[in-house]
Length: 435
Image (cartoon, rainbow, N blue to C red; front, side, top):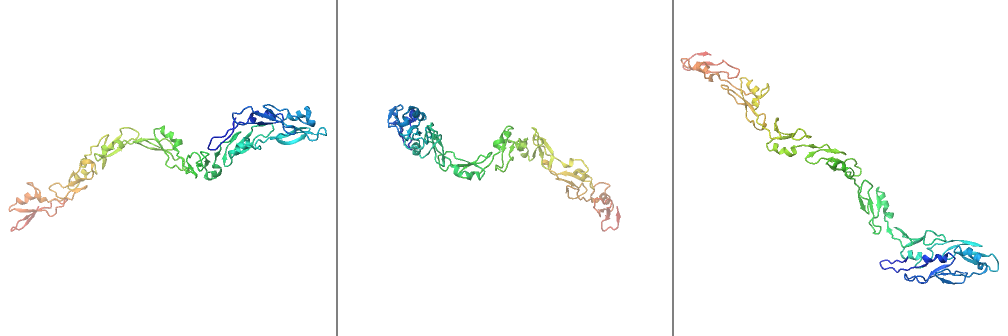
């Protein structure tokens, strides 16, 4: 029950026994005094009579006080002392002029021929060990929460603004709430202010409103919301990753679930439907062969194919394709072979590059005795000199076999111009004969 405080050092403690034993005195209208308030000095408190009774003290017990006039009558005196008040006879020459008066530190209005209306503000009393002295020494305010005459020990120490805190019957532990002064800075930004220590100056913070969680010291915070904090479980439950591309407070419901590699796919505010493009794993098998990879069913396994570049129809599942293709072997009305054989005169088709599925490298070539340059992707322009045919019945044999020998001449070597050859006499012979 000792009291006392000392900033930055050992306190000087005292023990006023009247705080615990004083009711013995005050209940009969007397005052209590502790002769020695040292913590180890006990049992030296005493009750003292108050004026107008002659001063008298009794150790550790109520004193026997002597009153005068009407107050000397036990029936009168007891009406006051039973209320913890003192009996006062203001005119001992007249009867029934007595009254009850409050005993310091109590104050109040005395009533004639009856008890007074008293109240006690414990913070009014001035002494080092009194309530006011204890609080004042700590730089705090004293307040009595119950000033009724019978109430004791109801005082408290209160911290001075802007600090906050109070303690009943003792020095308070004060907290410095800087938000009292600076809170408007935060609220203007739609944020809340909090002072984390209550003792350090300049550490107040602004904190974003939920669901944002950012905070900043001495200034409004830059608020952002990572929606994956709240919704990420939707993605992780599906074995996926949550990503919030825009964490500004204004951007809501833009989080996505992303599929893990090597699968691909994204779900807006929900788990994604993941696709496994096997070409991301096996594609090098195709590209190493100069081919393209294609996964024909992303939801199934072993559905990747290698296809020839330039002719995707040539393909192989799960392996490099065989891309040899002779376009002249195709049979259709518009195919290369039909183009050549259907020409006038008929020509032959030749695919000069059958590797790696390459297309468009076929050409038509003239057939002897027709002559002419081959034509790529079309019929050649062929010429026929009938005199060059070699057979016993051919034009040249007819002419050279004549007597005298003649020469063969074909005036029109066009492919469609046939049977227009003729034999011509060799000078000095004259004359000619048409074929």
